Length: 451
Image: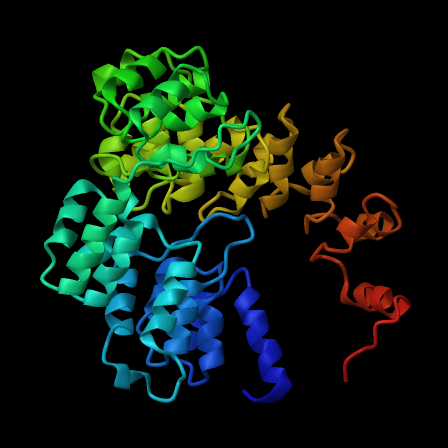
């Protein structure tokens, strides 16, 4: 595969939404590295299949595989944990193994660190890796490491790592002294949420003598004295009480004693509020908590067991169910459908892009009162013609537009829709459109035919 034609073909493979398994098998062993890179970086391909390339002889291919490209729905598609482990062993092998590929170990490692799909627990695993470079890198996330990992790094056999870890331990205990107390300022908020505060400053914040939003950030500060935490647990602001209720050191009984309210899930991007904190325990333990907020954190976390994932997928809290559908691989099709059915917030449609979202049998929702459910009929390849045609007259424009793309639309009706100012653009995307009609449309637009 050479020249411009090869480049175009590889670009197409890198964006293909449905690659058959036999095509994937050919791509994995293809002699042209551009083909293997296309597979490794295709966000639509099952991560298990992509992970087969993490130890590719060509480091560029391996790097593209872990770096990847974020799926159009904005959700992460992480590789399996053993895939990251194999990549790290491969990437940290002898420098001579890189040959003339112009990639150093730092370059390859940087690609892993910059990937938005890499789970946080993979970074934390650096603490126990045999390679000193990785353990040194782990020190960069000192504030986010569990206590036991911090201790391990301060006792590391490598002097440089011990020194970096001990500097991190000193830095994390250094009190914040340059707080901006201006009423409208938000610049100190992040530091107030994580840095030690002097007693006087902490009391000033808790008493309400600082910008009001500082109490919310202080509520999650791991260094806040217990008596001030107890004060914030009774704060009049429900956001503050909620922030206290998910503090790492609290017991289940202490959480239950707080009058908190879990914020509603209004947007799929709300997941950013549930980035895992350095909580005590594991995602499976958080998933068993009676606190929905902790279960939401578990739903967004890597390393969750299949048993806990399945339990969270049918959790009584809608936020837990939706976040599980969005962030966990292997969620059952009926749970994905249920999450979509129950969630009415922003970006709801992204849930239909999750691997395993059902297709067959969706025609039964043609008469549903929820327009989002009626839109699902376009995904059902067995939807009866009369059902599809009936939805072309649906009162909701989004439903009409969706069904104009269904291949069950009769050709004669499809040709009529092409002239419809509203539905014409959607009918033009219908795969049942005759080829000669496609040519006619392109000819009229002045698009030259290929040779």
